[in-house]
Image (cartoon, rainbow, N blue to C red; front, top):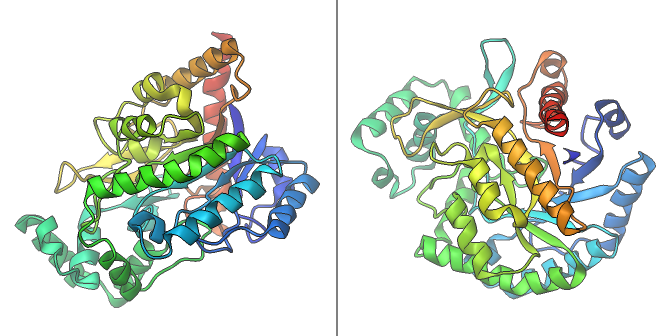
Length: 395
């Protein structure tokens, strides 16, 4: 697989030129300065391409070209935002960029309650604690229907946890949950979250899935004409939060959406960490069933912890080979898929992957970095994943 690296732009504390020492083969980036629903300007796309070229790289994957809330909910600005999305696709394709990652998670996108949970070895990792999340939902956000989502025992634990928190701990929890996607400028207040939640009133999981299918029905023909590959990132974590529907949380969810808009331009981002939080998820089976439509891969690992709700586990970001996902079996399934594509003569046989997330280790603890994206922790992950790939070639 092509070994790529997520880089957040000029503000990223990790210098592009230094990534050659890591063995990075391509860059995953986006224009985070532009809000969802806005067409990316041509001069900004050109500037990013030039910056990467000057450093000896190319722009392999856009992550993410965000889907606006108006598109997800079919709000009043939907038509304008769809038109802007198509314009961005046209402009990116004209620069030779073919792979576009996006997600369809409502309101909060990925969610963690701790961005730097101390690990036994002294490093830190991002983590999701269900009791902490319930404390935010019940005691900070005070969502009117939140009590429906937690049984009495979990609710009691959440209130007790909140009562024991200092004011600074409460503020930190709120920040961690509302921080938005890495690199994006969309940190929200509690009032912002409540306002966005209200736009989903009456939207069922079936409605949200149909909204996704309708979005794809609009943009996939453009992507197919341009020779592009759209790939949806899964829900993270893969279960409902804040009473919101989730529609990309399992292999079956992906199969339904890929079948509904049956085009090679409509594909999947396989994220083993997101989907792997579900104890029933089998990543090798995902590859066997949907491999032809996998256009991008995030390889990371999570470790489930004891939780008050077996359907919504707490978890933390584990080292790439030490979590609940069988990474060796996953990578071997992906390498076999590559061999199959190559035998068919597919131009896109070389699947771009990146070591997703990583624990903060050693010097990471003393340098600024985007949460979940430390230098040394990801270097360790990439080295381990590279070893699995090398073992496949020599087998």
